[in-house]
Length: 371
Image 1: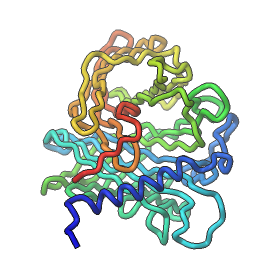
Image 2: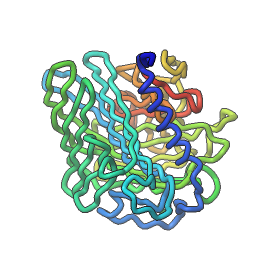
Image 3: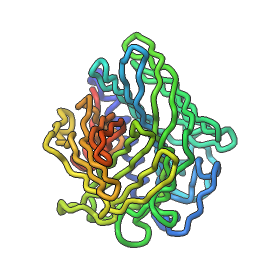
């Protein structure tokens, strides 16, 4: 028997898992509940699983520094995609596909590390347990309590263990219980954020260990088919200002190049008062700096100009590390990375850090299989 070429085993595994994702994508949406207006959030119930909705994610990002100034960004994301609501007692029956992304932006060293993982629940391989407050995929996990959240991610050549303390209550995004993504019922999600999580812990990378501190952001969304057929992707950013305020904006891009008028965001002041921002309340535009991925050939705009006139706020978005693309085998690739902002608020200088996510720039359906 001929020896298998290097990388073939992983390529076959990627094909198998890609087929699982395809099955999830074509599962009948009629089995699941849409995100509709009037939803009333309750905590801690809504921190955990909502299996009546087809898609759900828990998204952690943050900016951290060691005492010597060495800077990092991180991402830990858990995705659940419903495949079938049919009953099945076999532990290997696929009700849901569980995917997770783990990334470390070693800004001090100019390196971006990332991994992905895809599992079925099986006998405890991945899932959510509200009784213990745990969301996990293998040995990547988040544990949520009202007092704090603990994250653990272990990769091939990096790892982190972090404690997150909420400085503000959860922010319900959107209006009337839904964050609308396009016109029409069902083109929406139930979406909340924890906008300022005071973070401390340890990072191991390149044979070194760092004690770090900083701030993190958490998004949790659940929905069934929220994007419209004429939309191609989105540009999303979160900002934590030095004055204690936070900002979230997203713009939904249409395939014809226009921006959907249901794009929106929110502003949270230092006293935790939240203001909804409609698409007409802000401008978020690329400002002339593009990075082209050598892996996917996608061209991502890395410099942005943002203005929110009703807040007398304007700033530029830049990134300290250009190559922060999550090249994916199990789904679409996207750029997700640490950013800096600098601008003015009420004619006074303002600064902050945050995260920028850009989806839909890589060729649809193109999976990257590492050799």
